[in-house]
Amino acid sequence: MKAVVLISGRGSNMEALLKAGLPVEFAAVISNKPEAYGLEVARQLGIKAVVIDHRQFPDREQFDAALAAEIDRHAPDVVILAGFMRVLTDGFVRRYQGRIINIHPALLPSFPGLHTHRRALEAGVKVHGCTVHFVTPEVDVGPIIIQAAVPVLDDDTEASLSARVLEQEHRIYTQAVRWLAEGRLMIRADGSVTVFDVSRQIAALISPQPDAR
Ligand code: GAR
Image: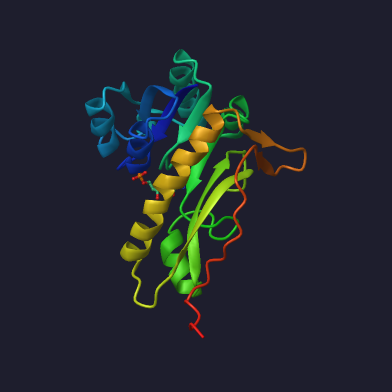
């Protein structure tokens, strides 16, 4: 499987994917921001790193057209959004529908959009997490592939909670891309995702921890 990864910043999810030993050829990493730290990380790992600066384009359509042209030069099977912080046009998403995935730092459908950790703390939820999903034109609502839940602790700050979630992001994104590469994902007619040959585990995360009695 051939993949192109889109980033906007730090690139830790991208780095986790590049280093995971996946059966994937990473053809290029593309950032919409020239200063994205992840570009340097990609180059150090020997991956072609390209900038398509959204500020150079008069509108979303023209930026997305340039982005699609660069992606298509590599003829990838999948497009992986890894902290890519631009909303994509419907036309762009449709072009790659079924083969474009994203990671979101919340348990969707809770907390779509930005500042998810702050909003989770404000809402007082006791469980938070992250989601890998197929991308559809509406932001943060596509078919869910995998989620990880973490406890929210009493003394959590945005920083401590985001660090706990990020560790799980790296795990589930790697797993989701591996499943995709292995051809083990199917989007059903009702929009839900099936993973073939996955082991069933029924364990609850309860937070805060109940007393042992
Ligand atoms: C990650 O937490 C990712 O889930 C989030 O941005 C961060 C990027 O970190 N993505 C979104 O909020 C998408 N709307 P990274 O650059 O270190 O992977």
